[in-house]
Image (cartoon, rainbow, N blue to C red; front, side):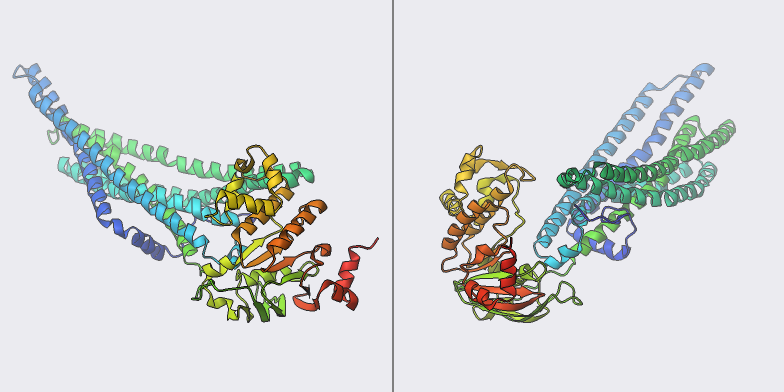
Length: 601
């Protein structure tokens, strides 16, 4: 089941960036190649906003024309000039169409930029995952890593798409509307401008109050997601221990916290529009009264009063938009910071230059010391020399360091001290990609992916033909059971790979390792999930595969390693005995004690 931290502050949580300026610079550097497109998008955004700002005044001119025409007709001095109104309305339609077209173009441009940026970031993160040391994954929650790849990059994509142009449009709208109001009547414009600081104070107070609840909402959402993940991935354990009530109660607790945080966040943010509307309506009433007075005195036309009222109603909207956008930008930069921090994690060292074409498989461990943390050394002074083609068994109690030794051999971790030699050369001198081709490993925990059995086996050698794949399956004694399955080699393993048994999974992983045709084969409890008869068949097959090939066998079941060329007996990170099966039994030491304990009545 997944590791949990409550409340969780993973990559999905909304939080302020620790280095806002630094993260913003890195993000701007990422989109620098689209500089011309961004400028073009800004130009279209400004154009769209300007055209939409001009529309109310032109509409007011039409109203004035109609009003004057009606008055003239009443006085008998004329009538409504429909041609003039027609011209005004046509120009108004043109403005609306051009504004909508400009807005569409800028949206298209920014969508393309945000999609390309997120595509490249996902690609970089994916490549980064293959270059990180195993020690990183040991210390990180898988959910946090997944959240960086999905939630954080999605946050960047969504906010990058609209925030920048919306912020620019909102600022241009406030300035543009104020200019248009001043062109109609400066006194009314100054009265309306008094709404701006009031609206700003209200908006910032609401945003400040609600932001912590939005952050809590994301934290508890992560916990609920984790609960669901545990329910799905650990459903067998939950059923086996009758823990349904416990996990449901835990989910209900987290869900309740999510509900409370979500309610407070949405309620407070929902207050913004009613309050802003209230402030806007007060301003509307003041403008209507003052406008009527000015109209009576002949200082303003009726059409201009209509235009001004429309401008005043739209004047407060950009303020709340700017507040929302600033919060979105803050969230985007925080997500960017987490992504960039992930991309800047130290990668594994790959200083080697040698290739492995002539490697035959002579291995030597010289004074090897290692600990997963510097203060806890578990391999204290390991020395061993293995000749090419030898079948070496590593045995010992749980926690003795058996699996750690082969992980060090494959350079999954760096040594604290000492060295490991492959054909006389330190493994650090080989290119890492070359070194990985030397080994194939079969673990006790099988790993297969959602796909056909044929594709799963071919994972060991992507260029293998169907015949080579089937031959490898036959060698591992997997061919028979594969052919009894629906669709045989073309049967699709589901996401959990639970549509075949544990033993069958193990046979497939062994066949996959055989297909890789490595110089060094590592079997870590590879037959632990198969029955005794199948184990004997696998042993016969593996004996053939291991002929002339250096092999390491880690086993608790000592009956499986009787014919090993060399047995290394480990305890507490050290080799305590070395020899063949019969020799070690004759010594009647540590190995004999372990062996005999497995056959005591």
